[in-house]
Image 1 (cartoon, rainbow, N blue to C red):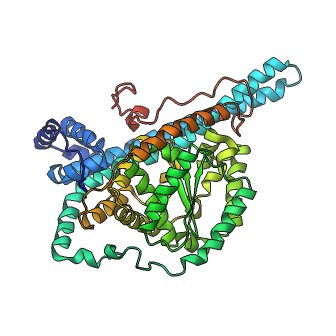
Image 2 (image 1 turned 90 degrees about the vertical axis):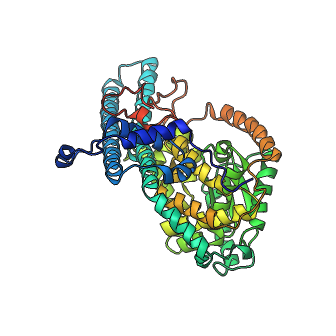
Image 3 (image 1 turned 30 degrees about the vertical axis):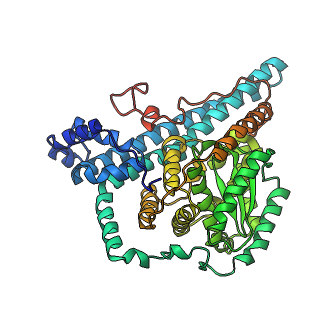
Length: 494
């Protein structure tokens, strides 16, 4: 398999872009004077269509696109304004729902002595529903909408900057300068030492796992031998082709969050939701390789110099307190909506510790190297990242983007590293074992859904109520569906 299996854009789409970019004006003088970004409708539509493309497609297409600097600047202003308006709309909605919630609570308090049990339960269900709706609106306003628009702006930056980046990459390869980059000695993976003393992190990781379990902050493991064996085998294969110097301890957690995290000393946790979200083996391998890179780079050790395990657990307790007391909604509200306290411990990934921009970029570079060295198509990580940012980032993958570096920087770092790697034939994208794992995983998911059906949560403690309402938005829809631009209906946005 080629290392760059990117689908080419259709000739029709390229013709549309060329037509749009050859049309007249991009930003009018009047618009510039008023400070409002304006684009010719054809150019705006062509850019919007381009921004719906995947990163993989745009890496191939960007060198052939011909949008001007003024067009790019105008579109960036349009996106920034749209993000502000969209977030503001949902903050207002959350405030309005909060007022309705307080009114309903006050009415319950005033009437508590004279209502029967049936009416009381009806009021409880109403309060429960308002809490859920308010939390959804705040999560959308503060996290999901910014993620969606940051993704759009990153793709716009890719269209703008990638052609020059690609020329520099090609020049570096031609001159051999790429071999002098940090960790450019990829032929020595497994025989080089990135950061000394990995083995000293084992006790730290053991302590972290023990404290998390004692605090009830670790979901149970998946009880399916096929799933566990496959994930462990895949992780061990990548570990053998990495710079790992400690045993790899793999756990598959029965949680529907799309995430994975590694604790110091080689303790790797893969969540069920990640297995469900990965479309092929290369995508899953890319994420696992990224997490192993956090271990080989000793990122957890460096972070825990600033925060003890106990203080991390305390932060998780603070998140729970905010939810229980109706405090300002945080990312923790999202967890409560999905799982209740049962899944709250999942905030204890390296995200909560405050992974630095430098560490994430290191893990991206090393993860690409490890996936490639283990025989997997390293583009899998880019494809998974794109899937999450485009389709899942608003909801199930929210925490995945919470403290990570800007999307553009990460995508360019990964693509650059892939181009710098020596060519290798037969890189795997999928396998029969992966498909078998996915088939078994459906059984695990079905059983978990049945068990969770009647489990009370922090935001839905009352049993027998109608299912909490959900804001009219689904993962997989473009953000314009949630926040139509002026003159568009929500049903017609694409």
